[in-house]
Image 1 (cartoon, one colour):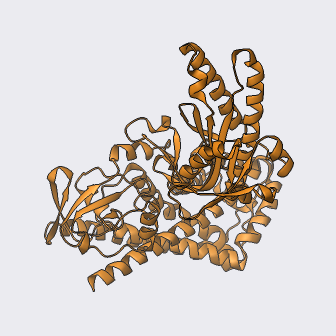
Image 2: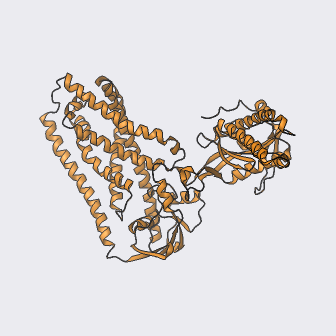
Image 3: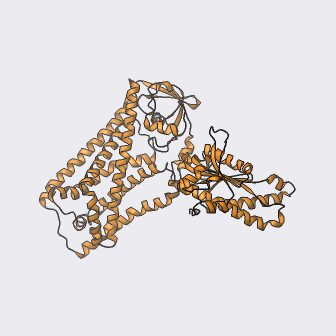
Length: 567
């Protein structure tokens, strides 16, 4: 019975989290479009009014108002609910900032919302920019500016901690940060400059009637006190729970080093760690979006209910066994012996703005290319060490340049071999096309290199290449014990092993490139059916269909035009 209740509670938590995220995104979209409208004041008041008509067509329509009101009520209610359910006030700085900003926004938002949309709905008040700005300037400029900054900062914190575990976010972070800074600056500039010009050029009469004020002022006060009451209730519940811990029966949690702590049943394992000052990795803020709080349950795993859907999804992605659980999702009811699996010091670096999803691993489709220099042992056997290093560096340099020029990422150099990843940021189709283009470019560069070194070589340099595509795990290996920002991204998984096997088979098949049909299908290309082969791959039950080719000529003849290198 207890396990069934726990599963139901976990499922409800996942639903609440998704609703909170969805409602927050709707509110942020509303704020963003509203701020864009304010920016038009940099040009003129007429531009603001023209933009306002478009804004109202969306947000004052029946569907727009329904979605907006539902999102606002949902987000505020779930924020207060989550606050009231906290078992500890030991939060990170960003969590405190987001919580306090969220609780402050309604205090400033209520008068603005009632003074515009409320009066418009109740009295048919025309809340044009001319009327609203004449009220705001100059007496309420601080209130309005502060409201805008609170709303925007709260939204940006939430957006950042949602996106930072997404693939590609690190690449776009500088651009997004610039936009996040410019939006409130330009919006404030727009409405304040328009209000100042309006005050200097027009004598706009005070637009509110006594009846409007008599209706709106008590309502604003009532709504404020109502919010204060709910917020106070949530804080009181947290305080009571903290006090209750001193008088209720507790359970014992044992951490590595035989460190034992006692806590009441109810909080998550992550909250228990925070209550007792135990470092515990936590990149997504306990929302089951990452796996950094994963913990091995050494003793007591059988007392925990099975993972709910959100947790199960993450555990399945990392291939966890039944002893590994997410600390942010389990609520111990009896003694546990646990071992956190991700060092908290690494998580601390990732929790900063420089963190990226590759720090903890991303599973995504990609194309993997292996390139190897044929008969390098024979080539280097009778040469001086300088000549060997020179030739190897020239070959590796040309190969790496060809890969990067075609949008690839050089994973590593393996002796006289190169491993490259394509499609990390531009999708599988573009990755496969660019990888095929890279095989052409490598072959062409080898021809130029052979011509350049003809007098120094007994035989031309020849390469073998293997290319396969599919789901891989991308991560910064070594990032926990070194500076993660400097650790290179590498690819892991069966696709990598298969691509390596294809490169090895290129020598047996007598062609420079062996590419799987998976790559050509994903790229949207076709090839001469007579070139298809089936080869056995060690570790795979079924044979793999491949094409054995000699770039660049057959590729140019049999495939669609080569893809443009991605920038």
